[in-house]
Image 1: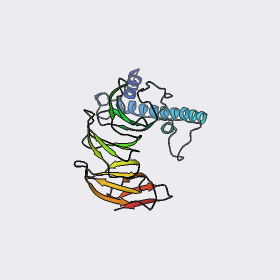
Image 2: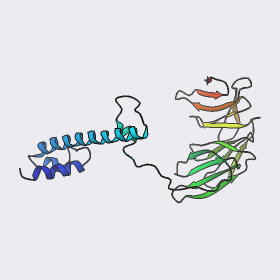
Image 3: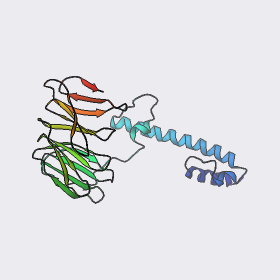
Length: 243
């Protein structure tokens, strides 16, 4: 066989997954032998990689969630140590919240009362959204691309993510608005320090429902379950589920 099998082995290792439809594997009578050797080499290579990952995890103090978890999964496929490649400067106070937009930009909300949109490739602020009169602490992007922000000024604002225009100001809450989410049917639900959840029509801004979370209990977080129910959490030591 000479050097034929080693040559095929090298090429098979390059072709990820050892695809049986690869012409290389079908063109030679020695293909089964090459495939066996490639598979064995791959298993040995993965064992070595996992041993290296285990040693690295021991050094940096990482542990496995279960004995069956591969060490290379724990380590993150032997990724290099993360290093900062960019610093986005623009806000003048604490950044409280951040959302990745569908188009790849990032929008951040700050205690400086503004939102900023960032081009994460160039590292530049492309837009500053102002209007809130207190800290911006929560936000969500709607399915149609608009951004909804909540603030300690007790209001929600809806923004056009392309122009930066505030298209709606929602002022139904009487306490700080600290969480917001979009429901599966397109409506918005917000939670406030006024102990209530408000459900709003995202197109008209009208309130369709108000739920009292709990007497004198500030609402901190709200999410929707897959079955449509809403879960809220507040200052007290329990969560509430709403149908």
